[in-house]
Image (cartoon, rainbow, N blue to C red; front, side, top):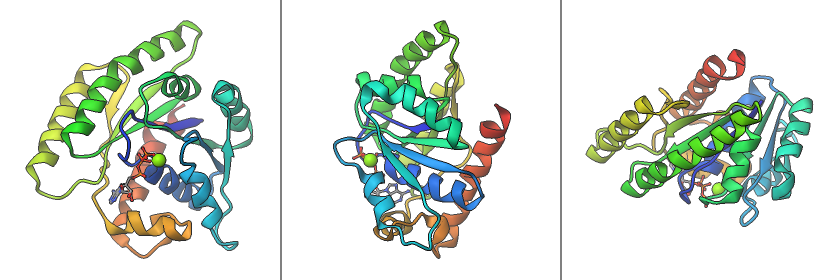
Length: 222
Ligand SMILES: Nc1ncnc2c1ncn2[C@@H]1O[C@H](COP(=O)(O)OP(=O)(O)OP(=O)(O)O)[C@@H](O)[C@H]1O
Ligand SMILES: [Mg+2]
């Protein structure tokens, strides 16, 4: 199974979600690897290098854009889950990520810019999904509301707007699990950790809920 975390918007939490899913799935016993498709920053690659020897080893691969599809398929033979950390762009590489994936997680933060980026992403995703279905492939997108702050009007407005879009679109769903804005998400990568390997219980619980929701809706439902 190939799960990408991708959006057109920079800084919406792609790498944060990717590395936290990797650490959490690894903790649950899945064989997991990451393809770092963000060739400008290679943040996931750096994160894996910061990990200590006693942590579960997570392999991170750099793959040339034009080999993404083939490499992701090859890796999915060896690993239960291949995560792709995407690049913030509405361009060919974004399309290639969708082509290479079974599932795309789209993190959206509570800002009008994130919402607009998501609105732009929807038709592009649908186009690539159709292309993919012509060659017998399938892909679904799941929106993940990220870095929410409790009881803020903007948070509620963005959630409503995303809910509205996802109810009318085919194969684009809103995840029930939401990630709140927490210091732990900023701190844990410093030591190459995911929040499930750290002490913030609330952050741990929400990432585990995300994994369980994905298990229910995606990985065990293939
Ligand atoms: N739930 C959260 N709570 C607090 N901070 C968060 C959360 N999610 C992400 N961040 C912070 O937001 C910033 C951007 O996150 P991240 O680097 O994961 O985004 P990105 O989409 O990968 O960015 P880029 O487009 O540059 O690759 C980071 O400083 C990260 O620590
Ligand atoms: Mg990133």
